[in-house]
Image (cartoon, rainbow, N blue to C red; front, side):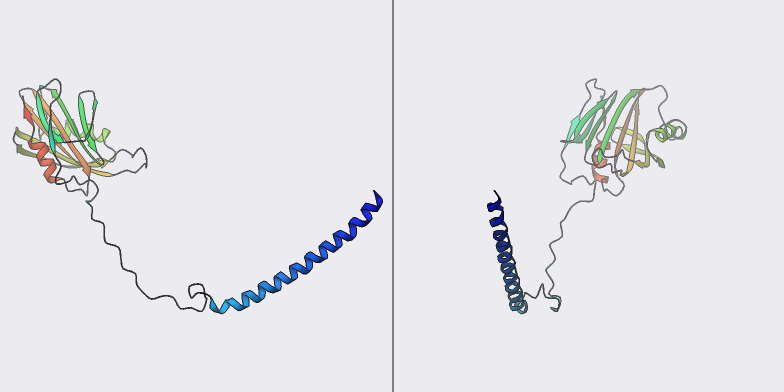
Length: 219
């Protein structure tokens, strides 16, 4: 065992010496190579090269509707609740849901809610402030009252209430949108329909909302 250990030491020394010599040679070669190729470097990486002044063409602007705009070619279909009593046109393809006596239709940032009920004392432009507004204040985050108007639609005289409020947070992004609301109150023979149309305040949905509110029919 001792003779092997004595021979192993010189071999290690020789190997280390050879490696050191080889490493020195490689460093020198690398340095020479770097010196030889430095002048031919590309202008983009050279610190002395001036920045390019050539302007790249701008991409074409993407055309799109503002958030909440309902397309002009939107188709509408007639909705009639199982119990009957009335019908109304709503945008085709919108998601439908029901909560109690209220039926909702929604797509992206827009929403339609319709509720039919019997009443002995229908809401009027004179009773909105005392009976409806407190309820809206409790239901709509950051509620801001607009105005109350007596208007006319195909189904007859209507009370229109406008207001603003925050939407519910988006379940994915948590984003909250400031919405504009139009609440139409229809009344006939002890029956009342509350039709609420809502969407972002910057959306232009005058025509679609007119189609919906003008389509209400009593049965």
